[in-house]
Image 1 (cartoon, rainbow, N blue to C red):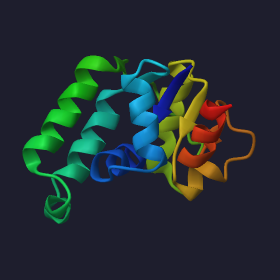
Image 2 (cartoon, rainbow, N blue to C red; image 1 turned 135 degrees about the horizontal axis):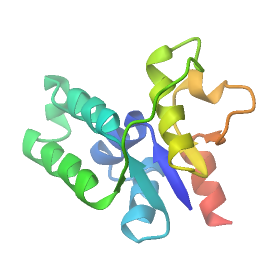
Image 3 (tube, rainbow, N blue to C red; image 1 turned 60 degrees about the horizontal axis):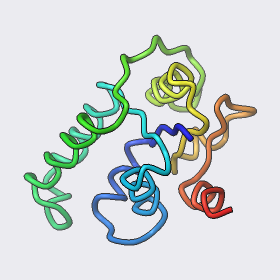
Image 4 (cartoon, helix red, strand yellow; image 1 turned 180 degrees about the vertical axis):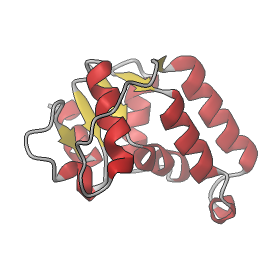
Length: 136
């Protein structure tokens, strides 16, 4: 099963030792799912994780190692041309374009703008919803 994880899910997985985001990353490292990333997604993740407020949860070195590991071990594809799909937050358009270009089965996000899309392709699930799907 091929998935795209929003940066918010990846950040949560890194800073919290438990919970659905961490379970999803564990499913990837256990090779139960295939994780897709792009340069734009990795850049967004780097931008977020280099903010000083995250130092209380994760060191800059661990954050850099996490991003490097994703770049090396996830399926890295070129960024796709995005269309205006997420009217409430156009900055999220690239995630939908990435998921479509990768023929992902799911886009996993906690972002209400993505979750509110009508009939998205691929489906957008919360981390909890995806974990429930994985458990079935």
